[in-house]
Amino acid sequence: MRVTKRVIPSLWAAVVVLIAAMTPACGGSPSAPDSEGPAPGGLAPLTPLQTAITGHYERLFGEHVIRPALYDNVVNCGGSHVTTTAYLRQADRRSRLLQLYVSSDGSMVTRSSSTTVVTPAGPFRILIALVNYSQTVPADVLGSLQAAQTQISADHTSFAAARGYGAPIVTFDNTNVLVDPSNVENPRSLSGILTALQRQETNTAGYDFVVSVNIEPSRSEGGLATPGSTPGFIYMGNFGNWNAPLSASQVSSVVRAVYHHEVALHWGWPGTHDWSCSAASNFITQPVLLGWEDVDGDGTPEILDQTPYGR
Image 1 (cartoon, rainbow, N blue to C red):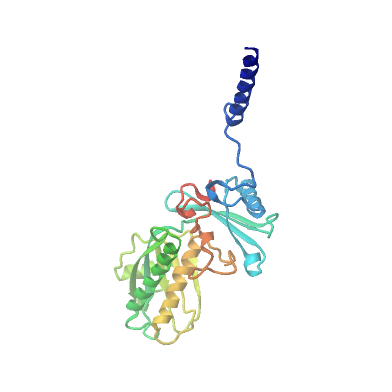
Image 2 (image 1 turned 60 degrees about the vertical axis):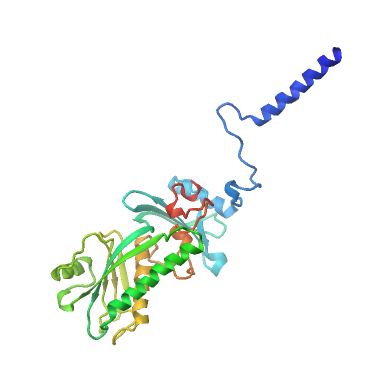
């Protein structure tokens, strides 16, 4: 009996210690995994650069961006900064876009901004008004336009398929019309092109973007976008200095400039063009910076994620 009394307390003490080790304190939660172990979801632990960027989002914007989307221009192409962006979705297909440019080690922020932009996701209705100059616009231009727009859609479909997404992140519903030059007083402004369209009784309601394509043979110029306008306005001039009917490949160049360049300005890609010093495949910048990649490992691109960036 004396032996039994000595053994049972010892066993009971061991059990109590084991239970205490497995049970969190009242009101608490189990401790976080060791920083050197695997991160939740099988992701690698944050690098020092990612950790620094997470701290900058918290300090500058008061936002928890646990798994930041970034592109390292310094490492990838000898640039001068690392770019990181975060799209925080709001109502009416708008997002708060946070942007940071940081040093290669993340210790210094060289540029920061917070703006409201069009969310780069979902369906977009686009009306293209092509000013019909006989010298530069061929008779079959509408067919060439449609073929080029089909390729834009294919770019987005291929991107989504390569990443295992069930559908493209962005889709376009296109309407193309020819506008008589005599009806257009100012093709370089939204009001000017809307007035011209109204004169020829073209319905302009319900479009997300109205695009004025003005291949004026006597004038060489590029394009512009006016973020914040309703609808979003894009102007594309004769950047190829063309003075003969456009070929199908030239029409494609115009369409790509509109959809992969000017539309991206409405999504928050900056006029300085320096989010990334190289572009990925068909797009004007690295898709991760538009929220199109899954950086927090939950299988959903951040721009569609209900809890983006591990929030």
